[in-house]
Amino acid sequence: MSSTAQKIGFIGLGIMGAPMAGHLLDAGHQLFVNTHGNTPEPFASRAMVCASATEVARQADIVFIMVPDTPDVEKVLFGEGGVAAGLTKGKTVVDCSSIDPIATKAFAKRITDLGCGYIDAPVSGGEVGAKAASLTIMCGGDEGTFGRVRPLGGGGRWAGRTTAGSAAATAVSNKESSSRRGSMAWAQPSATAWLASSSSALTMPE
Image (spheres, rainbow, N blue to C red):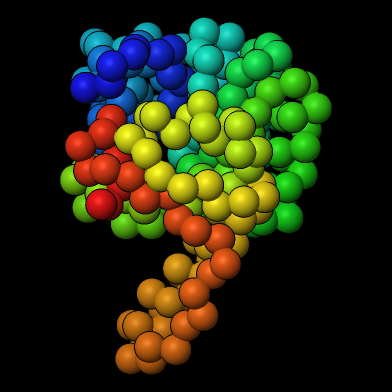
């Protein structure tokens, strides 16, 4: 249970997003959600369901995004009814999607130009990890912004620049692909993964 409840937005309640958001909800945070299609339980009854990503950003202080790919993130952030339209200075966007690092850098600049924080935070661990609260989340961005978001994960270490998270996620993906081919050759990424206690609200492996 989080010691301090926060106003958290979560956009994308799919295979990965639903269990991740569920841990935040169970930790006692006030959750504002938006997703494609029908809103699943327990969010339909226990969270504030918003009609758009803009409304999520207006209501929440920290907005998490977990959608499939780069065009989806761009649409959620900057499309009609997107997050950017609802942001005010001092809020933070945390993108947990695994997307193109070059696009991530551009998205981060547009959000930070609004006076808001942006954390690039792709995850590794799959649906099993999301449900078990044992994901590894690789975070890049401003160190001060990371410090404000970090308590939601129970701790961890800063990865570095905005694209560091995406770079680390790409390296992890390459490692997993090599392992499936029977090859163990893989270079450890310079970015350090965000590793937090498994007892936290949105948790990573110990």
